[in-house]
Length: 122
Image 1: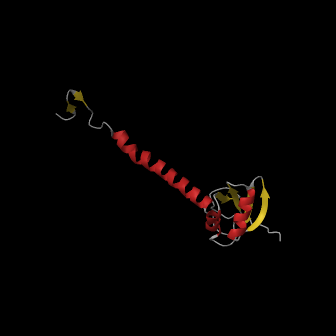
Image 2: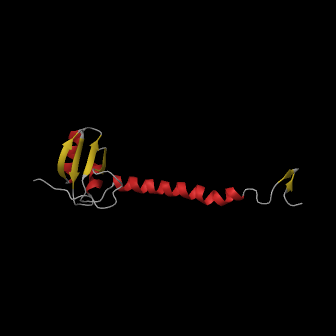
Image 3: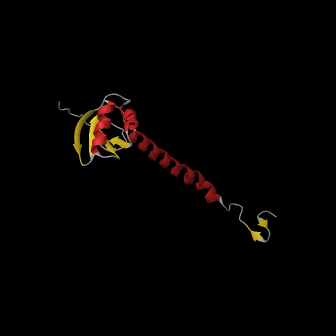
């Protein structure tokens, strides 16, 4: 008989809701996780020409030294971080090679969209 197994009567459509929702239960968290990874990567390795906040584990002086060694321009120093900028796309990679630090977009966000123009004082 259809739907009878070991004395348990099952409706032929049992599990239909779970089967219907399975793509969403897998796809939505996977999509959100993918977006988070993209945001983290683009914020941690930002494009050239945007202000970067540099936090060094060894302190502000180490962050200053790393920015100078990587060829960046210092915009300001405040609260244990250095705000720097460079039009060179390899600037952030060179920063990470200098000392243990974290370099993120100074404006925050995921790095998408156009940032406000930055005025440099020389």
